[in-house]
Length: 221
View 1 (spheres, rainbow, N blue to C red):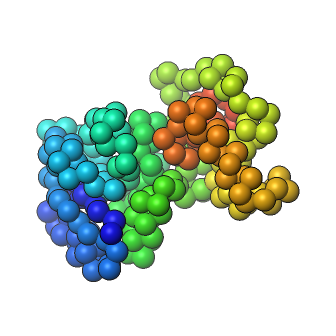
View 2 (tube, one colour):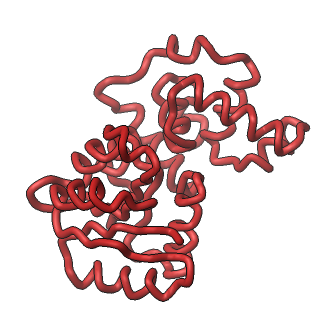
């Protein structure tokens, strides 16, 4: 059973998501929060698998709430998915940078929402390649504190290559096809890269690839 916490200041939005998710045999909404502070408190109490987090909320916004959740070692098994009204939103980029595992636009199709929750709960990052490339390419170039390329010095050439392909939005299977290796080998390279860089998930690899200059935003315009 995938345990989900909903955080949004609009009761009607929460009710709609709850009705949709609770109708699934493998998903249970364990709590609802109307502001970021309540979201953090309830996440610590309930330890959900996935938090669907609105960015703009009172008391504590979704960005700050995400940082608190991701920064809490006791919540290492919880993944945060940002809910946004706009795809190209600098706050979404900051949330990804801060540890969110992906994002969903609020008017997404119900089937996409359900699939997204399942993907994140299974450990994948919820990133639409086309949207993610535009989002991160646009805002990573303006990052207030860009990362140093020295952060990647512990990676092998193959791991750098794999990281760049992850940043292009490729799945393990697509990476395997591109590099002419098995999917298991591609997955191993991705996992080792994440461990070396202390990346929480693939979303973090994408952000780091742009911010260190491993992938240049202009390549994907």
